[in-house]
Image 1 (cartoon, rainbow, N blue to C red):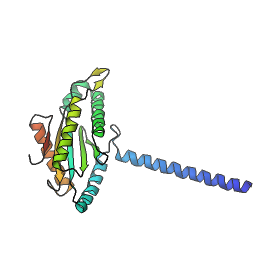
Image 2: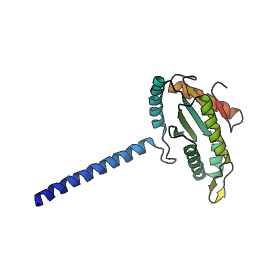
Image 3: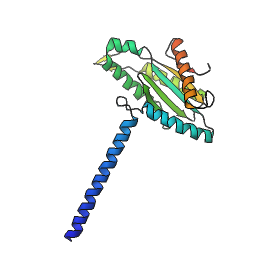
Image 4: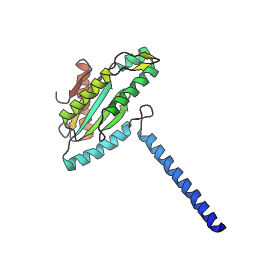
Length: 196
């Protein structure tokens, strides 16, 4: 009986170590694909996932749209209110993106004050409408820092769709970036689709 108890104890200990190792591995994996501040997926995960979705899309014929989102006048905001207030704003944009995404959408922090969303199965018109929904949600959100409301926040967005605006990730991102630049140059606080 004691020998059986010893064997069970040893097996239990090894299982405990194995479970702990799996939990640690998953934690490290999550940390490697998530932005630590916003908890959105990071650019590395975005790049990997877009490539997989493009291959899937080529088989199914479904479109993939990319929405680039940039906080308007963010540098000036940071200079005026400080980086801590800027971090609050970025976290709030991330929350709005999560609130306005479908389960199959992929919101990511792309870098700095820029975000990227992948819309699987949404054509350019649908992605532009989704971008407008997000833009309005950001514009209407009251954000507080230090117990006081911050000035109204706006975003500019550029949309491009695979395969219409490019056959691969780089071409589509280039077109979405051009559309984002057009949105900024046209007065900001708007969504512009590639080719418009």
